[in-house]
Image 1 (cartoon, one colour):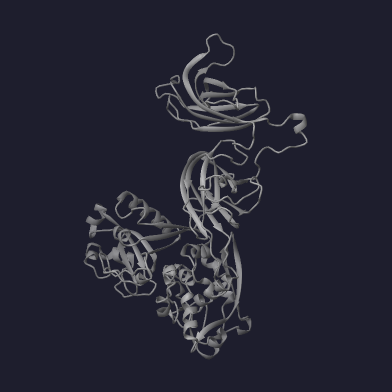
Image 2 (tube, rainbow, N blue to C red):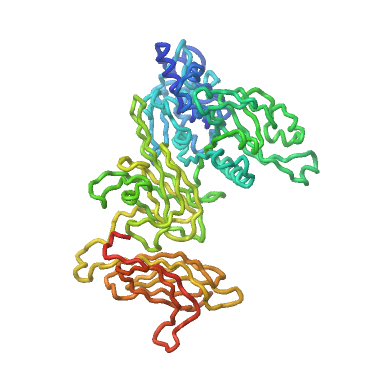
Length: 633
């Protein structure tokens, strides 16, 4: 099963449109009839890992269909190699050998097949019978070029059943299909918008990312955008076709030269191998099958690459040329969460949520994107911690499919996305004012949206939204980090009233302390100091990360306190980190008046206690905001 199969399954409107326009009567033949009366039919042949598939009898009609522009990227998954022994294969077609028809034990054949697809956080079971649509005893939908192999036709039927019918697959999205068949996360990249063709550094980084995804079993597709219906199927002078999605079948650093000179010279070229789903119309530029560039590569190196001169739709390109001609690429990462692995292990957190409508602003959860200033913070909010000095964070939001069981195939996805904000180190209640935005996804009417970003140590809030306010839907939020992030939803707006509130008191004031920076700290050694901040308020204490080798630290640390004793000051201390005992560098005290007009303070550090000489070296820059309304910050 390959990347092209998945893409082909998502673009089946051509079949139904062709059937409708030509008023063809479809017959459904039993698979067992093929077995008994024609030839030995099976789910897989012995060489199923290298099999080719065809998209059906009516592809030429679909290519002239006006809707083709929207779906042109999808057929590519039909023909990409996908190792049968892979985990995702056995997940999609579980226990396929037990489902196989056997001539030795025909009585065990039940006439049904079991498949699984990843939908909304779980693998969904789909069971189908063995009836397949035919015309003149030929399968008219997706089928293998090997006449006695039916796995791709069966998988396609199961996927159509999951969506409601074959026609409901019309308008499918490549990235969504990749997720359905793998449980991974898809990342679409616009090569033109990000300028990879002209920026060598960005291009090299992209190649390393694509190489990593490929080496770790991910699926990758790419395409040249067709700007109009007339552009569909347009063939460029270089042999590439607009509107076709190509499967990436290999990614290599190819060694140039011959013999020992090539080995010691170590000159390598970034190369990528693609496959046209139609099995023809190959690239005819540099590094095409018959180009003279291959003379620069030794015979042994060509054998390693599996280089052949055939009109099979598969070809190599230099990655520079790839970024010049192609406009879009989709990387589907298979996230490794197993600890028994040589590759990086990710910590996965999965939460389900919903955008819901309510008249009360504090209960409304469909506020729209950040353009809707008055309602944006009414959306669901999720908090997580980055516990390393810096960590790579992957976030993916997926809205619940609306097309399932809709035979008309008219369901449309909402435009969705999310923003990530850096917040106070101790925030446990919902945000009510905008804070520093550190990352933002695109907003698109796709079933899933993905973002990869690097974040520094601290606490963050991610706010998933629809683009427009007022839309309701369910969603799935997935997050991957190097270490556990304590990912959870913020549900409360303020501290709750309890039976102890009358005895112990209830907060009268909320204060946000933002320790911005310090300067002129006392030198603690040849390399300066390793300072950090401690903020204390009514028995609660938070501590910032340590900053190395600086006397002018940029802390940028926030704390949030719900205060029962407003007159008791907030204490901010600066310490120097040591191996055994940390050194006190100074402190400041602030009360925080809600009516204060100038919240920004620049204060000299003081010593502790009632010492006669209290001034210490250093100045601290702090902002303190306070309010009597607990839901104002």
